Length: 411
Length: 167
Image 1: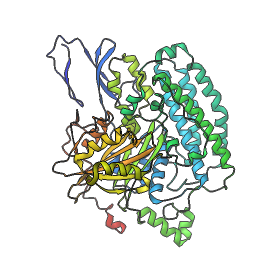
Image 2 (image 1 turned 90 degrees about the horizontal axis):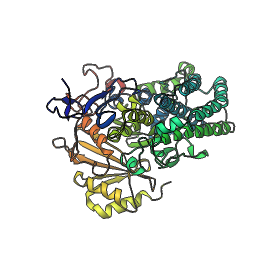
Image 3 (image 1 turned 180 degrees about the vertical axis):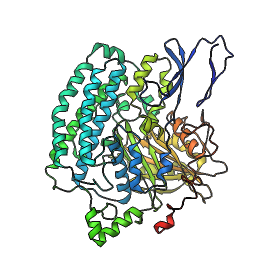
Image 4 (image 1 turned 120 degrees about the vertical axis):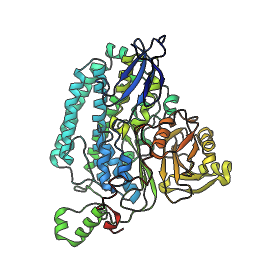
């Protein structure tokens, strides 16, 4: 008794055995397959080892964030953004804070911008570490991943020092940070900047010119820039095709225009190029962090949030002892502050592409409508079409190199 | 920054489509144009293929529900010209009874899932879409959950009602 797909409805494959001459095999790759890191289902039709066609099914961890966001005040939405791309949640948090600041017209001090840049670049590093490490695992090289995981741990310790959390960070507040970076945070950061480059260098030495790795990845899932743009790709995978689109440069936010860094681009758009682009971006991130630390020295100490009492919660001891602070505290928590009735789109360069927030505000406590432009969702739609004709093992590393995060895919 | 101004983009659009556009605004320097749903596809093609404007990148498609308007559903397109580094937002209102608008999949492959998501949330019918079915929600769902009439929580719960917050 054999099961063949003769008809595929996109979300629910129908198994009908009315074509015994069909020699293709149906393979359910996922939704919980150890080789796909996350909840991804692809129903593939296989001719031996080769994929003939595939259909992606998504939505397994859909949590209706956009609906929830319509019922939450601005400051409560930060925790929703954490749970999208959880490999680089600080970028999501700050992207959201900057969207609200843009809406409210809050100007943040330069020191806040530079602190944010440090945190965002650190989380970009963790994001790329995971992606490239996992790509190594999927091509059969486990040790590189373990070296990198240790460094990710060190970054998470810095986050822990700054905000108390590690993975879903809820870092920062509208207007800045909830507290200043302490000395331990800076000490850990300096230690990381000292210890990480040799590890990354060793990782590159393990992979970059490794013949097995090159033969495994070079030319696999190559995408030309026209196709990538046609599918609205963004982030490292778009840059690997040779398009130098990076939101940090095109529309600088959080004072990225003050920094001197390069946008690495690839040429072939294959898995190898994506790997190299991510590695190179980590070097650039380190460069940015070093510059930010240098710039911080010139900024007045102790400034860690904008002076916006209407939106930034006062310190607790003032709430208890100062009437004005108590009023502001009450108004912020109860959402009694008038906000402009307008709409705003703000994009940040997330770990895997342009993360956009489209916020329509009607002046109420909550957004009228909030839409997340999620790079994973948009980048993933080419996966099934591009897998046709590919070997199954190539499709696996292709998925790793796209860096699709299930939480962001399904929102 | 941007190599052309919002005004230049708007002038070119107006010259081509004239009275079918309305209410151009620039919230936070982001050109926003309302247009009739019937010409959206033509306008998108014009913006994409015009030799000067070159809005070659489809950033996003989504929709908004405004109960009480004559045409309740608003489809929103965000385009980006990577050549000129400028963005434009296009809005088209469609009635709830017949929420039909032409698909953009003939211009961008990437529009496919964006439109499926919008259909899934709001029930917008993208005419000509190759495969307009639900994408995030289960197939058996009978409603379009992002429409405003569907409450998130138990409707009997009152502790989060706006009147408790002075509104």
